[in-house]
Image (cartoon, rainbow, N blue to C red):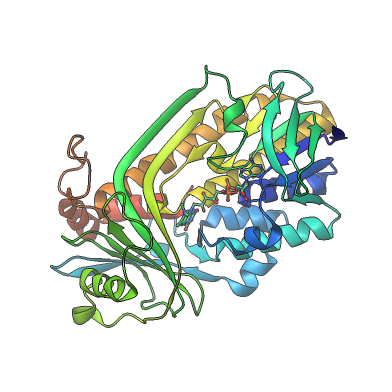
Length: 394
Ligand code: RFL
């Protein structure tokens, strides 16, 4: 078997792996990124779009933000709709006064990849990590199936598991790892539509037929969500039915028509969250979705991934270049408060946006009937400040 070495082997070329790779390379740490998919796939996978102010600060700090400042746009308003009425919150004037930058994840990933490769960084596409070995010890290794079908073994000082929820890093964790998982019993049909945004705000519609959401992506694409029954296949609804449901739930008749266009991507997301604790197991460190999964209800996953990647990069550089292990020793405990807050807020958003129908009837929503929450969000400045701080923050 072919053997190779790098000080840090990074599994996965998503936001977590690529921010980490860029920061390590800039610090002069020897690293390689192993990515299961091909480059085209990685650069076109449409997922997140809302970057928190802190994510932009991290990317600014490390010279990784030129693309998002050039092509992204800031966003600071959300609109809640029910059958009874609607209200808007300009969250840039609430809480900490922060706003989002809308920049599709696939564009960010494309930028991060280009910067890493241009600086001489090494990404092996089509290289699937099969297993992480000896994570307990000082010389972990990763067995990898390369694109041509051959198997290689990468030896490292550290392995960074940035390979998402179904990656190899999670399977290398010992049984002592604490695993918390929550199924929120809600499913969304996520749609990417080739049409300009229909409103200048994130739209959240709480409707007896289920939740509907509207999120800008670019001048010509918009993401919509429709709550659907668990188990609904992604292609079950015709485009006609999709637009009927969106019109109805978003109150298009009352509040204005939605810009229609072809649905260019559809996926069903079962809203779930989980956490593997601690985030470090010997020489294996987790970041991004590999460490904790968040439901997309509050748009936190990519933002946590960026935050954790920066913390991990600093800790690895301190250890490898300056023989200072403190950052790695405390990596997990420094990340956990951010994860806990993001998960708590995402849960709160799920309760806010969904009625009891479509949810598991067993655990009652902790905050009661969601419209009471909506009313206090509409009327209470204290509630609005709290919302804004958590909505944009990580
Ligand atoms: P990623 O992006 O999943 O990247 C992991 C990479 O690892 C590769 N991989 C492997 N490579 C080698 N060997 C293996 N064995 C491998 N197994 C997997 C994969 O091919 C992939 O390239 O994880 P990362 O970097 O942790 O980033 C996490 C984010 O992608 C995720 O949290 C967000 O997309 C979540 N999310 C959102 N987050 C936000 O902050 N704001 C949003 O607006 C937002 N919208 C969303 C979202 C997620 C969504 N879905 C699809 C669940 C909207 C949606 C619809």
